[in-house]
Image (cartoon, rainbow, N blue to C red; front, side, top):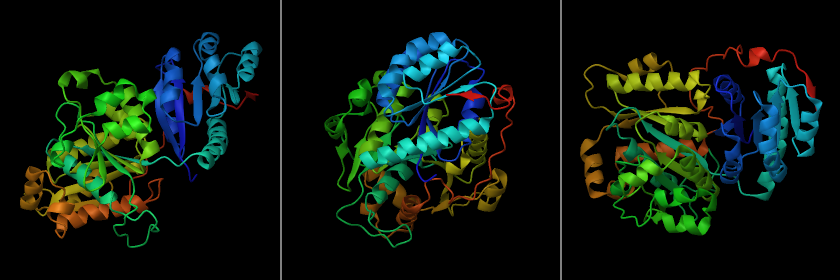
Length: 424
């Protein structure tokens, strides 16, 4: 599929969640943008996060869940296609679901490929209609440091600057050059406690991500314009919260909602993610079009990268969307070589950034992107190459020579489904 199909999952059965998630993420072009375990939260989630498919796992209490979510299905049926699944054979339940506008209803057991085909067909039709009516959403690029001090923030800020200089009209294989009508690019600091995105760009923000997270469902273009700080390079900066207390109050759902809204107004949203892998980080990575793991030729960094890739794969994440970037190459590592890293991780490293500590550290201390501080340096050229590759890459992520994800065994949740039985 050429377009991403965004899915919101409602599921109150914790045991079913891992395999349902793994199955959805195994479908090419499908992205889970939200997982809801409380039916009462569904209206606000759908209002905040753009999506094409609402997948409702109605068990273990289908009648009770339908009573709560029925009005939401009916009010959003023109913009979000609802698909339900349950073991309950109650015909009245099916009739009620169809009356409120549910597009498809599946009785377990059923063939997982049937659900895949329904999502592809219904989601593609709805997505194409939306694309005709509204502009395509921007790419979300999540930069993840595998250890502290690996250079992820430098990468995120300089990558955003380089993306903002590209010619949006040039074809992917053309030599791009800076133009006046450059892409709209945002860089977002998601290290809510100690993030340094604003510092590295010598910015003094008046507003931060905390203000947008207060009411993400009301974040229109005017509010976004007030919250974003405009840099001379053309990049718009969304800084970390001003206080630690504000950082504590931001939820994963609020953060995901803000990023989804930004994607509606920017062609590229570059995220400097925190160096951790909690619920919030997992949600942002799953929402992203590309997750760039930033490593160095250091054993702790490579070990963490290997662990993170395995965790993502085991949870059903399509690791073809992962990119590996090795920073500070050329510095005497004393032990590891790039070839060793590729062997350990069973995949190619996509980009190597040369070591130029003096140039890089000076730019950091001055709060100046390399485009302005050292435009002809090798390290700045390397960052630009990353931007060019991402701007011209296949949205499905086929540019990386990644190890194919392991086939997920469909026992457990889908093992219960078996043969296809469906009613409409």
